[in-house]
Image 1 (cartoon, rainbow, N blue to C red):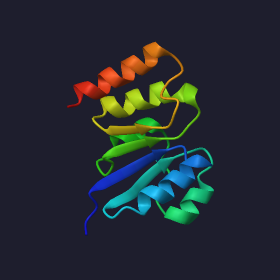
Image 2 (tube, helix red, strand yellow):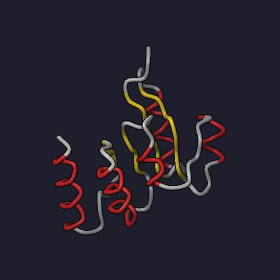
Image 3 (cartoon, one colour):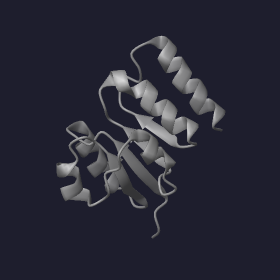
Image 4 (cartoon, rainbow, N blue to C red):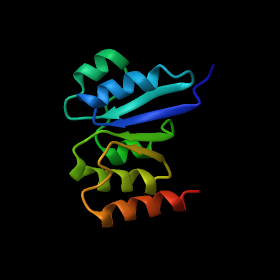
Length: 113
């Protein structure tokens, strides 16, 4: 079966690794790229390229959805980059560190419909 959802992961340590294993267990879901300053453990498991930045990840044609598992203070700028690039986004909790950031992110996601 060809991939239905191609995931690009931002942050692949700790819980991010666990979540990626769960995503990979779903038929049709595949991890195509990641970005993390220390990608060794994830690359050993998933054998996908580690790209230089969130912007580079979001620009990839082989990424449909960006999964964000980084410290919460990074969620807003990373999600906004992905949303502006036309990607779907799954972001670990908390979604943002302020209500304004959360509102900004959800409004940008709503405009994608």
